[in-house]
Amino acid sequence: MSDSEKKIIITIDDDPIILNQIMSILKDAYTVRPFTSGEAAIGYLDGHGADLILLDCNMPGGMSGFDVLARLQEKPLLRAIPVIFLTGSADGDDEIAALDSGAMDYLLKPIKDASLAKRVALQLELQSYRNELEEKVAEKTEELQDANKKLLEREKITLDLLARAGDMRDHDTGEHILRVTNFVRVIVKDLLDRPKKGYEMTQALADDITEAAKLHDIGKIAMPDNVLLKPGKLTADEWDIIKTHPYHGAQMLEDAVAKLGDDHLLGEALNIAVGHHEKWNGHGYPKGLAGANIPLSARITAIADVFDALTSERPYKQAFSDEDAFRILYADAGTHFDPYLIEVVRRHEEDFRRIRKGRKEGE
Image (cartoon, rainbow, N blue to C red; front, side, top):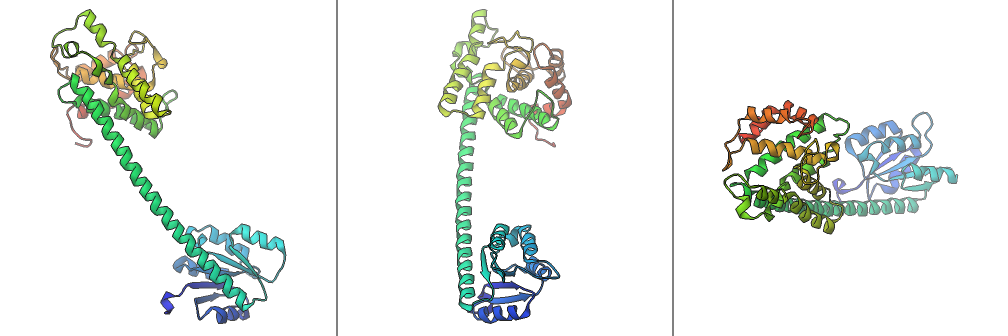
């Protein structure tokens, strides 16, 4: 075996005689680098590393073995190097303290040649097993992460397809869903960036609300074509039919939640589907909820949905300008819409205009 292929053993002892003895025992099988002080050894290890450390417990006048162990434990790369403690004391408390401090083994002086060689070989073999195990765990972890990423991506694609399929029954292109999603994203980001009591927002919740908003009108799948696609004004009976779509959407999502259990994304989708036509003053539908009793996700989506509806052309109306749409939103703060969320919209008018015009952020 060439010197470059040999494992590197660091020996730290203030007694040159001990260092020479260790060198003579191990030099044929390993590259041995001796140090008479902990400071010098750590300086070398910081730049070079090693495969194993033989460390004297008592080194008067400088860092003790326990001090060296403590320093090694502070550094992730050095902490992984196995340490065999060497000591002339048969005190069991010292042995326990050494093992508790991070040493992998404990060897009494005077050193016996065969015992030292065997302990070193055993610890290097164990370290090799540990490294192989860590590599396998890392590989499996990466495989699981890749599989989970693909699964999440598949779920997202399925959710998008379902949302757009429902949207295209009511709108020609399905772009309504994309715009509403982006309006919602602007609002939840503001809530993340500006924490406010009653509007607390974690990144996970923000992501769930943004994705769930895509399903706000999923209940329209159950609406009859002659009502949903009617080009003119709806009759009172037809309007009553349209107003049932939150119930249909809720029923579909309740079934999914019941099957999947505690799914936060679908839970928010359910809140949004059933609640995005509620009004702050309690005069909305289908339940007549008011104020903070309306789920936050539904209050956010209501604003995004109405803004897009106002600024979009329909068979029965022309599109409002951005300015007129904002004016309507602001006039309905505290009646139709959550007044604080309308303040959020005021801060992001330019973002709303950019999204409506189909521009990306920064354009």
